[in-house]
Image (tube, rainbow, N blue to C red; front, side, top):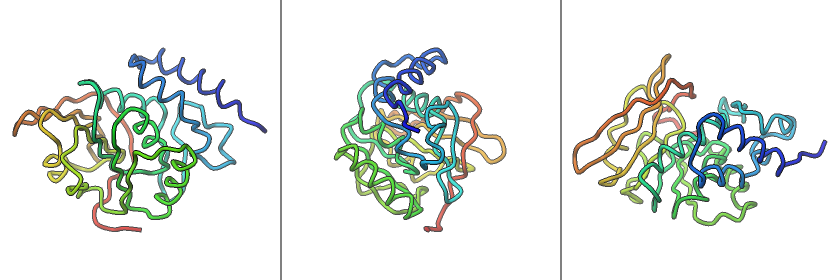
Length: 212
């Protein structure tokens, strides 16, 4: 069955606006990315449902609302030059960020997911993304500091290494917790970090150390 990508994205964007996403640039970026390219064909008919879906390797593609919400929070201080994404996953969040930011640096610990995401981003002709197979807890220090950091898996506590890679004035959006997870926004002013709790969320855990 053929998927009406443009129509489905328009309906999804309308739903996101109704759920409180108000940044027009974020909504336009969501509308520009064909989500059905980022899931298995067998799940294509669910690609534009506002729900998380499995992508293999015990990982998921996040609910569109969460992608839009986290992106909107990341951009609350305006345009971003360099952004670090922890957890490339399917590459869907990466593709949204690439529409909005100057450069995106994305770290993924599962090589197979990284390979598939790279192919999808190439298909979208997005060339402002660099990828690394690595431990998300360690970030990507050689490319920092970053205007924004977005973490798409939940650590049990805030990773100190990521805080040090956030630029002065930068914003980090990250879910934190084990059984109970809270989406947090961390803003850096010189060596002071302000932490705001946003809402309860549910993400796969951010695993340290082991690469697959």
